[in-house]
Length: 374
Image 1: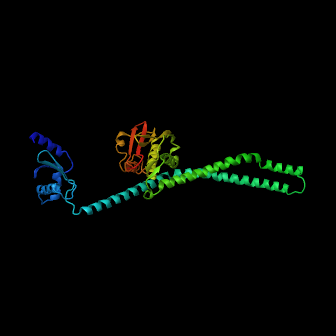
Image 2: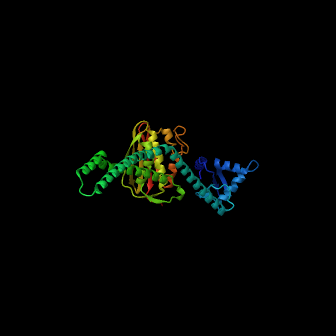
Image 3: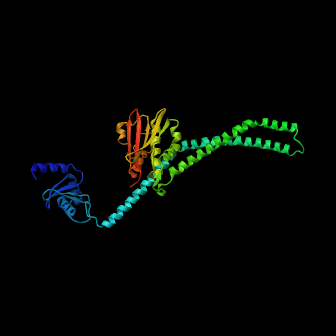
């Protein structure tokens, strides 16, 4: 190796942040700063850093269970990347510890997603209560009107019964009495008003039932949820029902649904992503705007776009929006976890979430998911 080439190699090694050494045969030819710091830390105040580094290199070249990597170079040289700083006492025990740590991490992640769900529901609670109270209010009013109509109809039936119970032919006076009773209760209007009154009441009850079902789907514990084929349009419609009170005063919502296949996913987690992005879109609109929800397929994957024409995101903030606890909202308006959790959920589904935003012109989030999990 020529001196100039070796000098360039040393410079390249020094620029690498992982502990890395250059070997020539059994000799230690060069160690980058990260390797030297590692050796000093492991050797301690009274130890010999160079001897400790040679021990680490010997371990890297041995056949012992290790994550150290030795890369051969031309001639008798080699690079040793010290991913394990000391030999593991028991590789099997280490694997068990790693599995336990991953299980704990999964549990914590599930708890975090569930906590964020409950936090989202807490923020949406007033709007959801309004969305339920509104149909309940007019159903209650309609029931009062229906009770009055029933009393009038029962009175008319009693009048008919009295006429039919008479012996002999029905007199003109009795016919006039029935006609007067029908006019008194406005029978013709009652017949016209009853069907739409019942239909409106049924619609109100169905609206409440849908909201309750959406809440059940949204708030279910993910631990009990299995991967299943899911209609993403149903998920979007369900989510729009939950957040509708947040949206209807801020924006017109336009759906541009394409043709989507069923997608293998964890439905309630995907709905959580939709909630986070839709609420953010509504909060980004100052006065009155528009939110467009688009779907489609591309290269064997499905995509969902949620676009708003709000104030947009500043370029400096755009780099950090998926960071945990980062938020530009006032205190009490957000946890700073919504988009971070959404990012984690999409990555868990082997998908991708991207954002395009222009200050003053709005923001578009795009979620891409595989149709099937591999």
